[in-house]
Length: 194
Image 1 (spheres, helix red, strand yellow):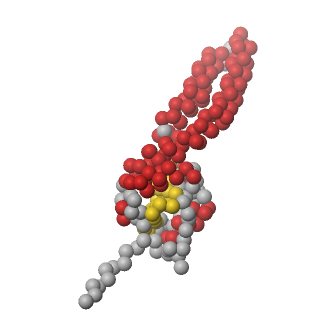
Image 2 (cartoon, rainbow, N blue to C red; image 1 turned 90 degrees about the horizontal axis):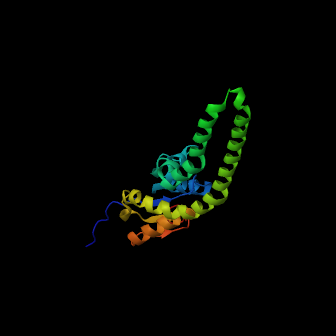
């Protein structure tokens, strides 16, 4: 005697894309899966990631941050030290000298100093901070995103896909937490799209 087959459940794929904007290949992959009837969850770093991107409404999009730059303390500290504090200091100093003929040379010196400081801050940001942060960002995101990923109930997922390089540490952590779910970096459509 055979048992009747239960209702077939739709396959579920969780795609993790931690680059600032999901690449075309990632958008194409999730669109193809959604068109094939697969339940797709897309985990992105921040809500700005999809501002100029059109995604299929069947794709459930989840975010780690609302705005990454304001929610990571290291980014706030760096921005404050390199840009905000000097701008306020120079602004206050210039407010005392602008419009006073006797302090015209001091005001010009302050304006020049402000421009030089701004260039130095941008250089430090680009040449020193950003390369270090770029290397550490995937680990920072994986730690912050674990709570968000736990809300997705990944035990019922068929596959976890790390769609880009920054997503690999998070996918690795999730693969260790859910050993029954296949984790991969391949955007493989074959199991779902005929």
